[in-house]
Length: 125
Image 1 (tube, helix red, strand yellow):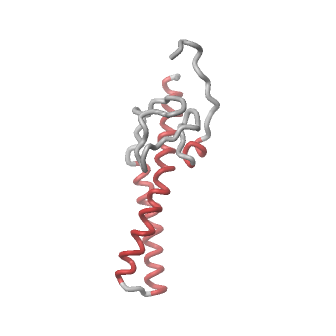
Image 2 (spheres, rainbow, N blue to C red):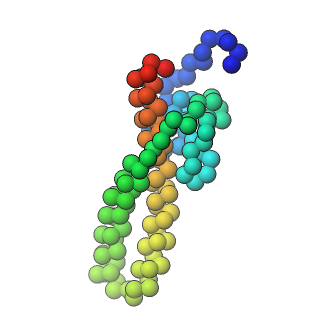
Image 3 (spheres, one colour):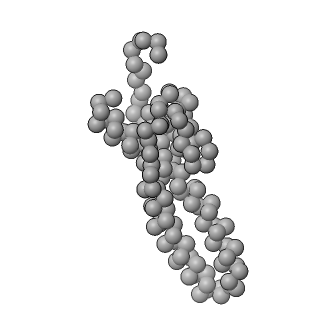
C-alpha cells in the first residue's frame, strides 16, 4: 500500500461478475484459477477471496435444475427413440458433465459476488 487515498471502484453488476466469472469489486480480474477453484486474490485489484465461500449452494442448484432437465430428457429420448441402455450410459454423462461445469461456474461466481456485496455493506468496507 502506498498510503494514498483508497482506490474507488465503479459498482460491478451481479450479472457481469457471475456470467463472466470476474472479480466482484473491479470486474476485470478472473475469479477462478482452474475449472472451479477460486483464486486467493484478484490479479487486477488485489481483493482477498480467502473469506469467500460459495459452499454447496451452487452445486445444489445445479443438481435440482439440471438433474430434473436431464431426467426428463432421458425419459423423452427413451420413449421416443427406444435406444439400447448403452446409449443412455454414454449420452447422459457426455451431456451432463459439460453442462454441469458451464452452469456451476457462473452460479459459484454469483454466490461469491453476493457475499462480497453483502459483507462489504454489513462491515462498512
